[in-house]
Image (cartoon, rainbow, N blue to C red; front, top):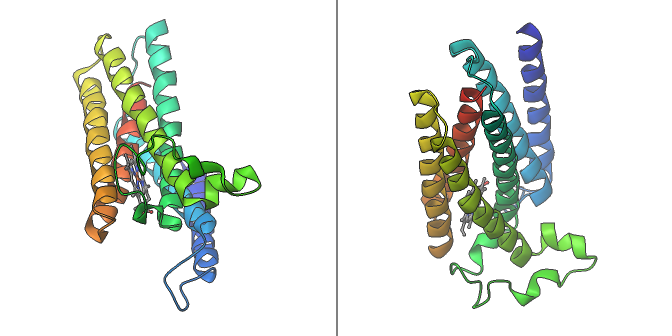
Length: 221
Ligand code: HEM
């Protein structure tokens, strides 16, 4: 426990440093910072939160002794992939907010009449588009959302086919519900051209969705 807490403490210190490094890139005359540093700061915040939540869950409800069958093992792997994808979605959200990509293409599901807008590879070299082209950054955020919109319900159906404790099914239901809320908040934020209250709720929603996925993972251990 001491070692785990020491790691979290260290990451907290690093986050302070990261915050300073982010602010150094802007916030002097206008409220704008580097999208790379903003995303690093956001990502590290989620990692620290995950570590704290993991430790807290371990103390509150030590990992159970579920019967480890093949199907349960595959469900565990599935939730771990989902956690990774939700984390990637958070990083992608950092870039969307960081270059204010939410202020353009305020229609859904099409972007200016296209599912794949023609401008996604206009910058050279091509990889810069993923971080600096607001069309590509917003397009990626939408694509990962579509993936989650398919994979999370698939996970939920798979979990229903197994006999699991009631509280584990409850955690899976919560994950599905949180995805619906989060996608709705994201689309509303986009359609209403990023009003602060919706943007902030969408950011908090990301944290709750991530939490639900971490909780399901703990329940399946
Ligand atoms: C499915 C899960 C989703 C997750 C986990 C997620 C996560 C995030 C996160 C963490 C941010 C950064 C917020 C900030 O730092 O201020 C963000 C920004 C944003 N997301 Fe999502 N998002 C999701 C779905 C969507 C969808 C479906 C849309 C719309 C098509 C959307 C539209 C936006 C917009 C417009 C912003 C920028 C808000 C701003 O400028 O403050 N998101 N998202």
